[in-house]
Length: 130
Image 1 (cartoon, rainbow, N blue to C red):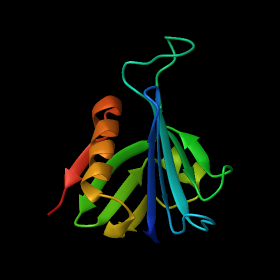
Image 2: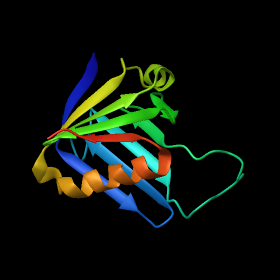
Image 3: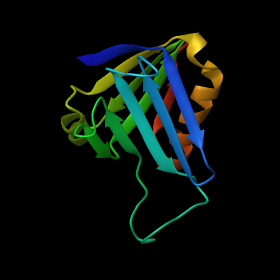
Image 4: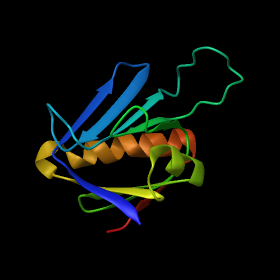
């Protein structure tokens, strides 16, 4: 069983070092949101021996995890994120989060491009299901 919500707003912030994507049901007072944060490929901070991981937060900081994103599937305006068992338990979900992104929220192709960036940098499988 996956958790589902409709996103009316998407924000993408890329300062050249860190990228943050926020997907939420409301721009000013989100009750449901999903956030991804990661370092750009050419930036490393801290211990070089520590593997880079994506920070993922779902609805609350207590429901967060580093890593565990296994697969991203997108079909039309729906993006489904599949997580491993550990990430699912930390996010308090049962394996997946499905988000219908309202196209007026942002240019959908730009959002997909950013997720393809995650896939390339972190070995996440991405599937286009047209």
